[in-house]
Structure formats: structure tokens, C-alpha cells
Amino acid sequence: SLFGEVEEMKPVRPEMPALTVEENTLDLLQKEKEMVGMYLSSHPLDQYAFEIKTFTNCDLSKLPDLITTCEMQKKSVKVMVAGLVTSFKPFTTKSGQPCSKSTIEDYLGSYEVALFGKDHEAFMSYFQVIHTALLIEGEVKERYHLKPEEAAQGKTAPYGFKIKKITLLGNVASTMIHNF
Image (cartoon, rainbow, N blue to C red; front, side, top):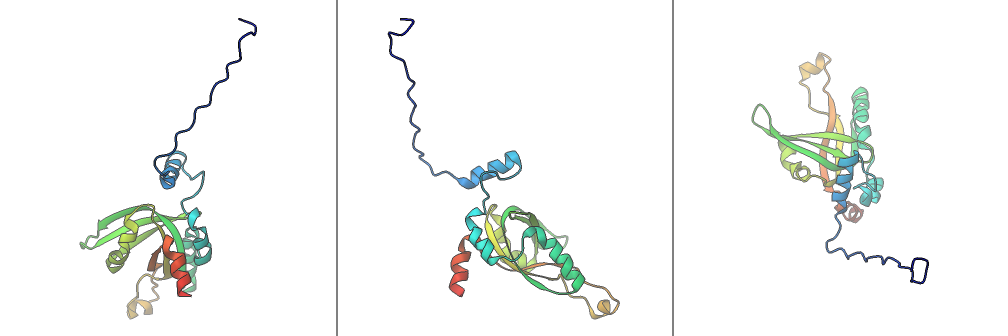
């Protein structure tokens, strides 16, 4: 009947099927960044917040200013930074030497790392896999030593960030705490 002798029909909510595959959070975050230009729901480094807070002493966004300050004051500084590899580009120099440029990114900024010669050989494997979380120990110091006659003329060598050691951020807590 039109006015009520029939029971009200209520829709039945369908059950959500169980996930058969584990959700890949990193892929979801990367899609967020591609679509919006930034991470919205979380940051890939959030799972390493303890390690970053405890073992780093500089943000990647402040590294260029630190290099400039060290160059002006003619001093070296040990630096520990953490970040996520966002790009890797291998190439060859004019002399045929293999090298690479990589970009690492943290919460506040990014920094481009250029690896040449023995540094390229030693550290390139860490940068080849995009989205690898790394703790990088290094030093801000002169990029190269001047010849005595150049130093006598008043020339100065430019300063840069020299990598000494790289550790996967996932292994940092167990490695660093074990060493204490």
C-alpha cells in the first residue's frame, strides 16, 4: 500500500572484503607527493623519528648555510644528517671517470650529493635504490688542498660536504646503541 501497511525497507551495508595484500605505505605516500606535491597523511621518515632526533645534528635545509659559515670561518665541522634518497643519476666525467649525483630529502629540505672516484665506488650502492632512508656521517671541510704557491697567493679552496660513512636508517638504532 502507498501509506504504510508495508514494512520499511532498510538497506544492508555490504561487508568490506579483507585485504589480501599488505598495504604499501611508501607507494601511497609517493602517490600523494606526485599528485599534491607534498606528503599529506604522513612522511616516509616518520618511522625513523627517534633515530633522526637522536643521532643527527643538522637538517638538510641548513647544510648549505653551514658550508658557507665554515668557509667564512675557515673551520671544519662534523655533520650527521638523515634523509630519503629521491633521485640518482650516474654519469661519466670528461676524463672517463664514473661518478653520480643524488638528491636526499628530509622533513625540511633536500640536498644534492655528488660522488666522484673512490667515494662513488664506496657509497653509490646506497643511493641507487630510490626511497632508501639513510644516516650520513660526514664533514664540512675544504673540497681539496691548495698547492703551497696558490695558498701563498691568497687563494682559498671552496668548502663542501664530504661523506665519511653511510648507514641505513633502519639499522642505526641497533648499531649506534650497541656501540655505546
